[in-house]
Image (cartoon, rainbow, N blue to C red):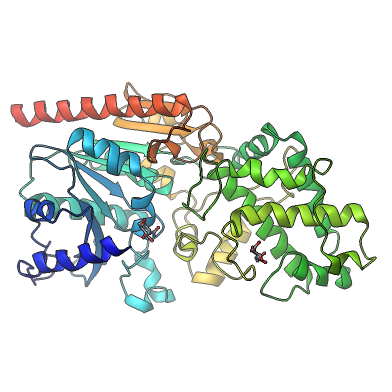
Length: 508
Ligand SMILES: *[C@@H]1O[C@H](CO)[C@@H](O)[C@H](O)[C@H]1NC(C)=O
Ligand SMILES: *[C@@H]1O[C@H](CO)[C@@H](O)[C@H](O)[C@H]1NC(C)=O
């Protein structure tokens, strides 16, 4: 952390002198000065319109945070831009090493990360940002326009007008990356869109695709694991009208809150499934700290407690004394508790499980919930017949009601596919160019991503044994060969796009 704080102080010294004070002005960016700081990363903000689409062109501004890494940059190198997604920008910076370190060095690129509005410190209305009347500026088209304006100003102020920009993103950031290339090809010369579920929307893909991939992941190495997960979830739900059993869930799952009602029981199963879902997404082959600190292959580790013959989980003496549950039930309940520790408490530092808090320690779930209530409303549900999940159908009416009650927002279920296309991907994206759609075949999000070739100028790669945007992470000796190969495909494409841009510049 120290080096970042140091870098920040240095940058404000450099930029303070050149800062222009008129609204919408982009700070002067002196790449050579940044480079001379010999620091990996510098942070600053740019004044960005809160409302890009106000008919009279007037809008207040907010400070949008961005990061620049000029460590490997050399004159003539490209800009590699990360389209920030739903969290603190450093979360993505820290977990996109293939771009930040490997590719930046190979291409002598200037690395730039922008923070998504309403996340991290990029709050349009400060601590009032999440008040109902202020939520209307949190949407995809305002965010994309932030990034276009940002790049335009950045190129201008840094004297890099004719520098190609490749946009990167993983997950929702990958959705933004692909859409930015589709809509603004003059600004973004190519896009690496990793694990980007751009078609997980109404009527385009089966609602249960996500859950079925997780089922496969939790069955693959431990056939009994998904079965026992289903069993324990059904067992817990069966306590709903037995208050004396419900009360034990608090000590069994070490919750900060009292567990007393049938609703609380649903919170417990939600809490458990949340861990299993996120472990499937981030089932990386080595220890990581992306959504939470976790060991390598977290799914395997979290399945171990469910191997009930090999390792009988230790039953806490408190529960053992009680005859409310059979031994088999206790073993199963305890196995689930041990299993989710891998996600929530791998460091062993958690005092209790806070069921009211964020689902993922490193992402701001609140802002995402708002996006999921307007333009990113993804219909996800399952009848639970073919997978380890309890039946939970997606109801357009119920989701709408929830969003209206919670945020005063009505979901636009058709927005994404109408605005960007995707109902018929091979038709809609036939003329789309310069995008790599990269998917992991053990990533639940591949169910709503572009996994087939859609045009002659885009490339689709489906990466064996890869979880959620694994290939964007720092290369690691434990990466499967498929990930190494996928990175090479991305290199080939970037090289091609950069050459193409040079030709365009020379002939225009
Ligand atoms: C990013 O990494 C730095 C250095 O390892 C660390 O100090 C910081 O807490 C990380 N930030 C986030 C948001 O993960
Ligand atoms: C987290 O792990 C530590 C060490 O194993 C344990 O003492 C603590 O109770 C755990 N916290 C929760 C919430 O389970």
